[in-house]
Length: 593
Image (cartoon, rainbow, N blue to C red; front, side):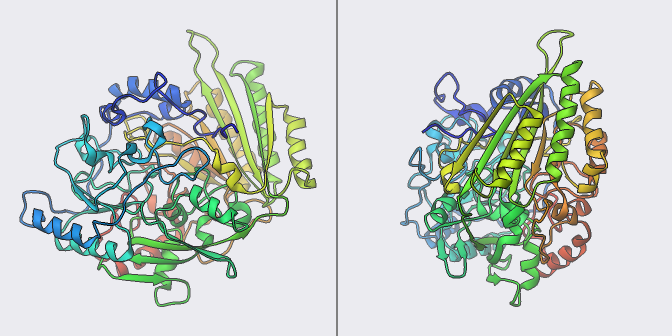
């Protein structure tokens, strides 16, 4: 079988047909700044442009979190103390992250150009519980510590600050409690990551602290009668979909197979099934969390930690504690399975080509407004700059929609038939799946990148600038006119990504009891609008009051209201109740003012 081609990463990238002797060493030498123009191109062009343009783009330095202990100070742990902690974490237990190859579940995020598409550059075999960094930086061959500490899109200006000083690999809630108490006793900064997909540097220790990696915590307990599954924070959607499909279920999930369940769920969680099965936050039933005190608690809507449960259903990760398990809802596979439909258009940005693009945009927006909760999809629009002076730029438009039902379902046949007949794509493809695991099983990799490809600069806000667009702004033409303005005025606009995979479709569930913003709850699109600075963002922000926590701009004024709206004050009160000293910190997270 051929591999499914991911819309975000259209190819399995290899350099000259093979990975270099040390992929990590090459990437570590990249400057931390890489403009959004790079990230908006196909991946091969991204690499080429990033190598070239990153040399010339200034970056904004990141502010540091609370004052933390560093080596050389009396509070810093001695080798004997580190050894004692390591012994408390069961050093004889197996600690391995290794992918068994095509057709098997992905076990964690995979760095770009990792040989064999292995997590951690293939270093995750027979790991120790704890590693202390011995070198000042991570440039060079065989730097094992840095391979085990790799994460997506670090923003620190200095290469050495992209990595923590200590990395720990717990296997249980008890291990996490021991680690948190140890870090607190020594006044160490703490950052936490499962698979490491974060776009916004929120699992950064600024080169000074302890990095808690929960990727080995892979508990999975199904309760088919209650339609609930309890999951460890190290599980990927690939692993969960395989196990759920074997039992006749699926879970609401994201698009990328190596994304982890916890960060996605508690930050909001959009994906192909959100319009019908709910966002990630809607599916969380219970959380087990280790607090800043080291105490492990269970939070649900009925017990004494109901306030914490509410806050963590949308309040984002890394601010409340370390999640050691999450219980989420299971959903029965629809009769007839799932259908995926893809279509592609392309043309010129000049004359009739631009008119064609404008017409396709209007037709797509009108079509999207009519879709029921059974549809979840994405549409990407990106420009390609002409290689010739005075030449005409080109554009490509791609749609990928998942339908909860078979391809002979009348609703699918009518709706997709309308789109194809009216918009006449250059290419279209319809694929039926009995289970979603069949689609995920051969899905192309969406790698993480261990350099600052989303770092802010003088002309770019950094991160993933976005806005949750209301149905009203689609219906009244505001969204169309705003997008056309940037397409037509000669501005070098970045890729537009329209995710119709939240809960704004006709008939989508919109339950109460979560802390996400109102705009994300009832918006029809999570719209990622590519590059640009503050002025560009201001125009797109008129399309909605809120943005998605996990995919938003790095530089953002009024972030509290944009990310959470009227819920922020209540979130802050819960933060002060459970973490008054701000032990768990991340940029633009609750309490990080």
